Length: 152
Image 1: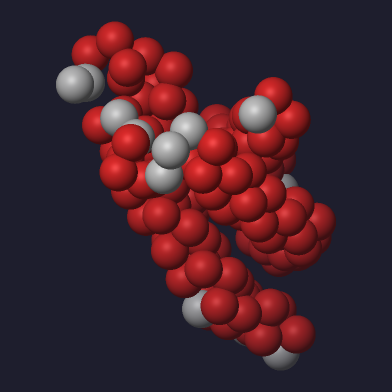
Image 2: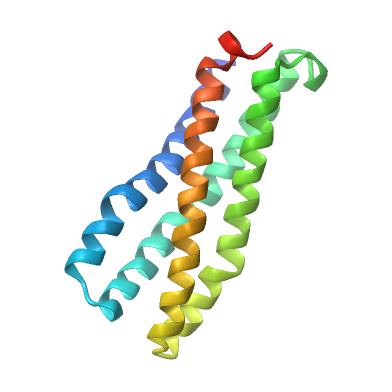
């Protein structure tokens, strides 16, 4: 059980921590210091390096979470906080899948064609969705750690 919990928590830390860093630190600095073309290219590079980690994290979260549920008696035996965590995590994954397969795909195409206004629109969409996902991720962490004390 311990190895599954460690994999689960490390994967969440990498994913949610990465989004928090991108949203709260990198985004404002990049906006202050870079003009749109280099800023858009920077974000493409950031996403191309971060998103593979998110894919690995999602796989590990699903695997480790499933194993912990199995080891503790199955889904029917889980608490409200665990079911809430599953729901919120699933929403986060769906948002990530949309980001990856829609605006991220389009931003890459726009940048390949030097369509900086089009890439900027896609970046704005990604920024909004990452902000939402960061908030959901922080709530999920709160539910996972404190939920058993407040949720029945």
